[in-house]
Length: 316
Image (cartoon, rainbow, N blue to C red):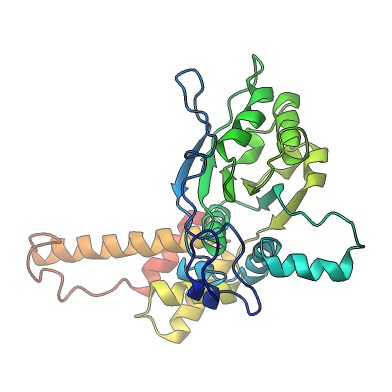
C-alpha cells in the first residue's frame, strides 16, 4: 500500500507479476543526470540522451501493448530484472545467502539482446524500460583515441548518478570493439566507475556477438532472439490483415515463414500493400486523394496475393 519512494502510485503494482511490490526509487523518476550530479559544461559533451521518461512499471503488459508476440521467453527473462529491484527480492535472498553476505543490488549490469536484424531487439529494449518503469537513455560513447574511450565510463557514471535507469547501446559491437572501449565498459560494470546507490541496466543489441571481447560476454546476460515461427507470424498477420479469412492468414503465415520473414517484414509489407492498394484505387476511380471526403469509402483492402508477393520479394 501507499506510494513508492520514486512517486509511483500504489495501483502500479497491479500490472505486474503477482507478488511483486514496487521497488524503491522507481516510478516518476526524472531525467537521469538532471540535477543529480550530472556534468554539463561546454568542455564536456554528454554521452547520453533520455528518450523515454520513467513512469509506472507496466510489467509484461508493456510488451503486449507494444505488439510484441512470440517472444514470451525473452520477455520473462528480461522481467527477472524487475525482481532484483524489489524489496521482496532482498527478503527472498535471506533464504539463499548466508548472514553477512552481500545482498546489495545497486550497480550496473550488462544485457545483450542478440539475434538477426528485424527480430525486435530494439523494440524489446524500449518495452523493457517501460516494463520496469525506468527512464531509457541512449548512449553514444566517444570514439577511441586520445583517451576518450577510457574516460567515458567515469562520465557515464556522473550522468546517471542517483537515478535507476536503463542505458541503450544500439549495435553495441560497433562501440565496444577495441581494448580502450572494452576497458571502459569493464570499469563501469564492476570497476572503479561502477555506480553506487542506484541501479543501471546497460542494454545492448547485436547480431555479432563474436566481435565482443570474451571477458565482457562473461559479464553479460545474453538474451537470444530468432526469427518468428509460423504460429507467431500468423498472430502478427491477424493483427495487420484482419479482413483475411483464417485460412488465408494461415497461408500468408506459411509463405512468410518460408521467406524467412521477421516482425519488421510483416509491418513493412502490411503498410506497403495498404498504400499500393489505395493508390491503385484512386487512379482507377479518378479519386481526388486520401483526404477528400469519402474518396476511400469503397476502397477494398489488400488482397492475399499482394501480401504474399511482398514478403516473397523481400526475401529475394
